[in-house]
Amino acid sequence: MAFASVVATLVLGLAASAEPGRAATANTIPAPLTCLADTPTAVRPALDSIPKSRRDRLSRGVNMTDLFVDGSEPDLPGVFARLRRSGVRHIRVPVSPLVFAPVPPAWQAAVLRRLDSTVCAAVAADLGVIIDLHPFENLQPEGGTTEQIATRLKLVWRQLAARYATASPDHVFFEMLNEPKLPDGVQWAAMQADILQAIRSVAPANTVIATASPWSTAAALSALPPLADRNVAYTFHFYTPMIFTHQAASWSVPSYGTIRSLEFPAKAGNVAAVAAGTDPSLRSQLAWYGDNFHDAGLMTGEIDLAAAWSRTNSAVVVSTEFGVFNNATPRDARAKWLGIVRAKLESAGMGWTVWEYKGGWGIDHDLVEGCGASNSAATSLRLCRS
Image 1 (cartoon, rainbow, N blue to C red):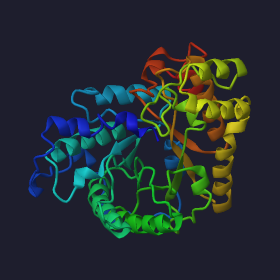
Image 2: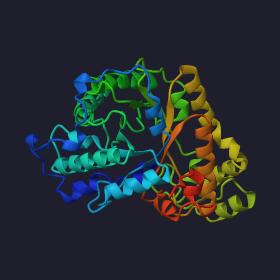
Image 3: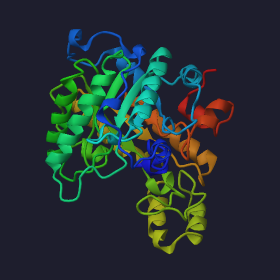
């Protein structure tokens, strides 16, 4: 749900600098960097569970959303070493399906080189890497069908997974699709099973991350039948309550662009003051927020729902997105929300990936500051090593 803040930068930023309207030829795909070669995938057996070492790697992570912007993070080894020292165990890298479009974009080679170097640097730093297929465009062309979407996603994953299955499977994870939007959860479950088979045809040993539709919510997950493959983890995203986590986000639906300085947990006086200065159409939602989120524990029911599904199905569940938009949120309130969600996920045995390292939701400045302040995201997330 937080992806709108990076639409203009992730992948598309590089595309803009490389004439996105000009198609590349199919033979411009670069060979993978030599550091990706570990063990031939043909000799890697399929696994009937997720090894503990991989579950540990999924325990604490950050979304890296600026990697494909020209000039960003020039020192990946240095950045990843600092993240690892802080207690981060993995990164999640959103990648657009356009990188393997039927007509390859002009920027394909540059994006793949950058992704190669990211994976190599992360593995060298003993960080896991979740390669997250994260569309910023409509997957379904006008007049298209869900079968066409499935075919496209399978083709993309056969190429993407084959390229990175050559790296250490203990470090590289494949997240099948960010926040699928099919309203029919049963239809999505069948599609997801087909996508998984496409991945397994080239990557038998990597742990794959599945999700539920629509929108990767805990409620949708609670209705999802688990896949037969036991080397699969499941994710849900958590931004509850969005009127707090997305305050000042004009691109959210509905728009919360006029909301500023909303506290968490809800305080009656603060809610009234915010309501007086916001769009009148949002006042009923603010009243709902004030009535239901004065107790921080009231928001964690969704996590309980996901935890119950995990226990029922003996499945590994993680949250690969949660966070608070920084622009107008009181720092104390943000820190409290992050700390409560982090603690709740961990007490339920779930790994997490905060959104995001840099950008409007970023925790990078907090990590530099460290855990000296109670209102630091680093303190709340317990990313406190030197």
